[in-house]
Image (cartoon, rainbow over all chains, first blue to last red; front, side, top):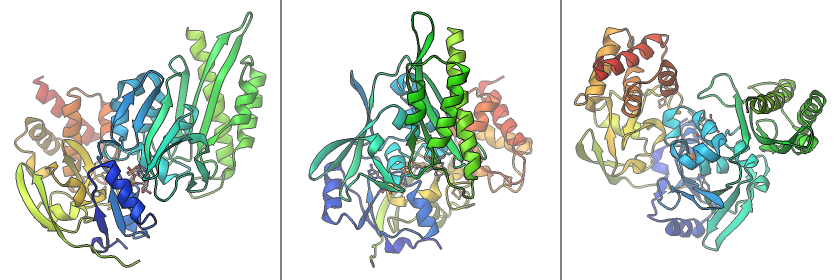
Length: 296
Length: 161
Ligand SMILES: Cc1cc2nc3c(=O)[nH]c(=O)nc-3n(C[C@H](O)[C@H](O)[C@H](O)COP(=O)(O)OP(=O)(O)OC[C@H]3O[C@@H](n4cnc5c(N)ncnc54)[C@H](O)[C@@H]3O)c2cc1C
Ligand code: FES
Ligand code: FES
C-alpha cells in the first residue's frame, strides 16, 4: 500500500555542506532523495524503511558538469537529460549519452540522476557498465571531508557498496582518454524504453596496426544484470588485448565472457539465456570493431 | 521508527497563477494538483511507468506521481489546463481530436504535454523521434499510430506547411 506522506519528515538543505551536516546528525535515519525515480516507486509500494527524506534534488554543487584538461567531473545530481545535452559527453563518452537515452522515457531522464543510479546499485542499472569501462572514480563527501575511490571497486555485493552512511556521492570523474576509441552499447530487454535490462553491455576498444596485422588494444567490456554487481569482463579482455582480431580469438573471448558472469534465473529471463546473450553481445562488439576498421 | 511531518505552506506557480497550498512535503505533486481541482492530470499506474500524470516543471516533462510537492516549490508548473495559450499545444489538441489520437482520453493530457515538450525542442521531428519522445506514455486504446501521426501533423501545421 502507498506510504502515508504524513509519516515522512523532509529536510531541504540549501547547500551540499548543510546537507552532509544534516546527514551526519543521524546517518541511519535520513534518506537522501535526488530525482526520486527509484525512491518514489518504493514510496508508492510502501516499502521504504526510513521516514526522513533529505532533499538533494537540484543542489547546485551536485548538478554541474565541469571539463578539466585531464578529466570530466560530472556532479552526482546531473540528470540523464543533462548528460545527453553535454557536448563533452556526446563527443568523448558516447556510451553515457547512449545509455542515458534508454533509461526510461524522457520524463524519467529529466529527473533520474547518475548519482542515484550508482547509489541505488541495481545490478541491471544501465549507466553502470559504461562507468566501469571508462575507468571512473567517485568523489564521496561527508562532514569528515572528501575521499576519492575507484568506481570499479565501489559495489561490494548485491546492493552493498563502499559508501559510509554519512556520505553522499558528490562527483563522478571520467578520465578524458577515450576519444579515439570505438564504442558499443546495447540493452536487451522486452522493449527499449521503460524496461529493465535482461542484459546490458558497454564496451570500448581500439585497433592498432602492428607491422603486419591489426592488433586489439585496451579493450574494455562491462555487463549488467548478470551478477550481483555490474561486472568488468577481465578474462575476456585479457584474451583480446594485444592480439590480432581473428575468428579463433573471437570464439575464445566470447566463451570466456559467458563463463565469467554469474547470472541468475529470475522473472526477466533464465541464467542460460543470459550467458548465451553475453556471448552474442561480445561477438557483436568485436564484429563492430572489425567493421569500423574496414571502413577507415 | 515513528516519525511524523507537519503540513507546510508551499508556493507553486501553476499555469502562470501563483498558488499557496498547505501540504505534507512528501505528498505527490499529482495529488496536490488534483486537490487544486486540476483533474486533467491523471493517475494511471502511480509508479512512473505510464505517463498519464505528466506535467511540465520549469519546462521539463516529469511524471507528477514520482515528485514530492516539496521538490516543486518555487517551480513553474504547466498542466494540461494551462496549455491553451500556446500555439504548439493548441495544434496538438486539434490534431489529436481530428485524427483519432484520443479515445478514452486517459493518456491524452500526458501525450499532449509530451508532444509539446518534443516540438518545443525539435519543431520537425521524424516519426522515430516522436516515438522516442512518447515512449514513456502508454495508451491502451489507440494503438499509438494515430497519436504519432497527430504529433507529426501538429508539427507541420506549426511550421505552416
Ligand atoms: C519508469 C522508470 C523507468 C526506469 N528505467 C530505468 C532504466 O531503463 N535503466 C535504469 O538503470 N534505471 C531505470 N530506472 C531507475 C531510475 O530512474 C534510475 O536508477 C535513476 O538513476 C535513479 O536516480 P534518482 O536521482 O531518481 O534516484 P533517487 O530515487 O532519488 O535515489 C535512489 C537511491 O540513491 C540514493 N542517492 C541518490 N543520490 C545520491 C547521492 N548523490 N549520494 C548518495 N546517495 C544517493 C538515494 O538515497 C536512494 O537510495 C527507471 C525508473 C522508472 C520510474
Ligand atoms: S501515474 Fe504517474 S506515470 Fe503512471
Ligand atoms: S486513449 Fe485511452 S489510453 Fe490512450
